[in-house]
Length: 327
Image 1 (cartoon, rainbow, N blue to C red):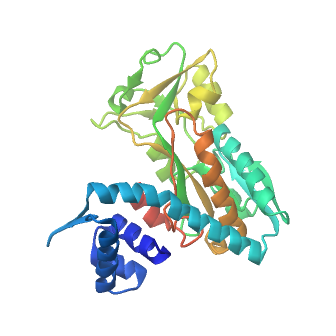
Image 2: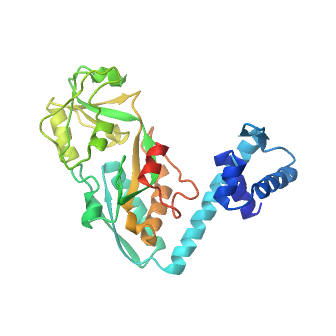
């Protein structure tokens, strides 16, 4: 298949609408239709079921999409690497990480980045709970691999890197500690840790809701925790509980703590964030590519790496509003 045919087919797989596909590719609807028919004639089977009301993939079409998508993503990465080699990625990129698992990913991506870009370097720093995204504004970091959501007008949220189930850290003697899973309703009357006032309410409330689905109150401890170590110490003392993702039972196991999955909570996502004015910085794009390449092999059990769409890394950035709509 020619590259234009692959792009047309995969875009139609996403949109399932000939008109929207044509708009995205800046071509006519007729050209999209002719291209698909040409591929179908070559294969000898229909790829899409068409009607006046809907477009859907056939079994053959779904199989072709699954086979072609990794190849298309690989072509995109190869082209971006060639572009970076031609333009020259130079200088030092400072990358912050939140949480031990993100630290593992950042250091692995650093090795890939520096191998491919011998004139570029990466400096790695930690991001604490109390900082949220302030390191980007202060200039002490150029890129963050951090827990989402981040919804700030001056920042760009890149593609999600991992998505996994939500866990709670509880003291060993807690009434819920020996359960395999809990629900949000089970948290009525319990107390979450609290975060410093510099952390946006939308972030804190997403991870630590103040009410259960049934409307019952969930408290916050009066002493805010600025780091995860402070939060775990408060939990171990039996004063609060703290949320997290699949890295908790893997990397934070202690005899005085228990980890319980919340089966009806939205997943926890980790993603890349940078300053909007750096959207075109080739170092940012190069490092984002490296992160997505190393993340699958490092993902904790139960945490799914999220492969970027063809345009998610190295093309148009994702705005905060678009990122919210995707979750």
